[in-house]
Image 1: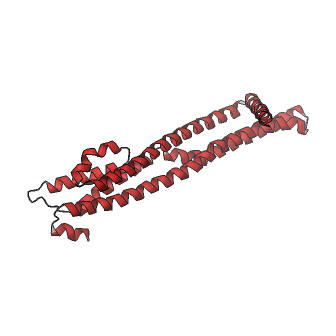
Image 2 (image 1 turned 60 degrees about the vertical axis):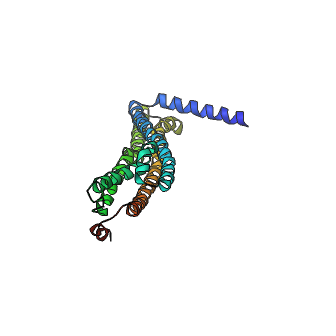
Image 3 (image 1 turned 90 degrees about the vertical axis):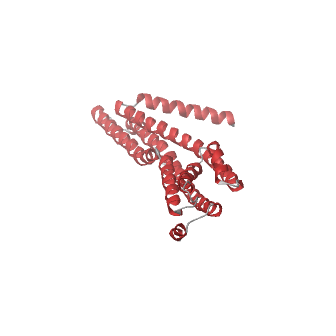
Length: 239
């Protein structure tokens, strides 16, 4: 059974290769464009998948280390080892603002709201970094089916033009040209379907990271309030 399936797949693969070789110049150009889109989109998918997997693991470790730390200075000393977790950038953004404020002679916080804003800026920068190159996946999913369809329409026009020139209006005469033309539609769908699936999955993962950064910002503010004297004005700003 397995050998039969392998032989069938080999025959089908050989027929597809022959169709591509026999296709016209426009169809080959379309196929090259679709191949370029597919290669670029798979490169983005694999790089995002690997980076987000590492970021998710490191985020869990960072949260555990943060909750065990007695002081903010303790977690600051080891934060870099938890890259590429986006929580590290959020922590560092808030911690830098925290250090600037507690450096005053009274050693108290003047504004919790400024720490919150610093962490929001860091989170926004991380989200922008995560979304980099993602529009290409959306473009691939939206455009490649139409590029493939263009190749098919052009191929069918070419096939019927050749049929009219030859004067042989039979199914046997027109079928090879149409089958060659349909290859570009299939290629367009093969490029678009994975791009759409993974675009949605990656977008969902980015939203999850955004929610985790928001939650961590609140946890960070709680830790700052517990460990540092806060001026009355800062308390009022936080309400």
